Image (cartoon, rainbow, N blue to C red):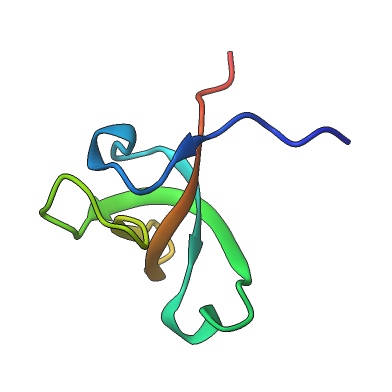
Length: 73
């Protein structure tokens, strides 16, 4: 299966409430394990972060965005 197109998670302008994203949670940073979900809240205030913008998912999980998936039609 081909990799889906996605936007970079380092730019705050690429992320909106309700977006489908993949994050890495703090305790998964070493393994790089990603968690997929929908953005409930954007926690990083700066316009850019080299490790990814920190968000809270609708499930309550918090992590830095690695991939932002476009809305499907």
